[in-house]
Image 1 (tube, protein in one colour):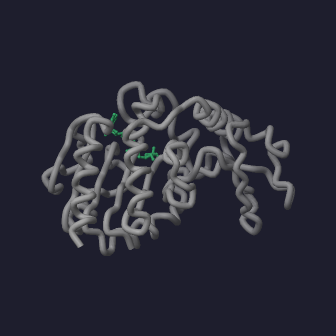
Image 2 (cartoon, protein in one colour):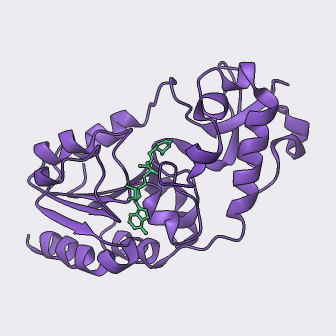
Length: 238
Ligand code: APR
């Protein structure tokens, strides 16, 4: 279990040019979440769902990590066992900033991966920025079943939430960066841990900021140095 949990959402990637979901003009303004990110999307709307993720995957190729990703990657390298980097994001900007993929806990899946839809096979392939059908023609080479994006859709189980709960058990400092709090209950976690920092661009109706020890309403790249100082103070304290 980590002493510091760094929990992020789409806002940490906003300054790298990746769209958030619920701000005006965000992804869920432009696409119907119930069509492309629902438990039955692959059954009812396979073509448009695959196209949606193919476009987002291709869009990742030229995106670069920003200063917030870089500082977090440096902290994780300096304190590998004391910091858990947990993100709702499916982009690969923490990896591009130098974090090993296995050192980033992606709660909602990973954009460059596709997964065999056969539950008994379930094999995952990293296809980079290619379209799903350009990877083994869209079918699992092991069992022949069709691929799906390796993304958690609404209404599906989220196995990684167990890992999030495990990581916050002994958490001394819970840091939230760039999430509206609409999906993962950060209020509950903030009440449970010793100390917590909330960094968002602006207040979110889903987050009770009075529950946090410190609140920074500013861009992640402007907040990250103050956050890093506090993380170092905690980890150097014993
Ligand atoms: N710095 C810090 N915070 C920012 C920045 C920035 N530069 N830009 C935007 N934000 C904040 C916004 O204020 C907002 O509160 O990021 C948050 C983004 O909220 P959402 O768009 O709701 O994204 P997120 O909270 O990550 O969504 C959670 O919902 O659709 C699902 O699976 C999807 O993982 C996603 C989940």
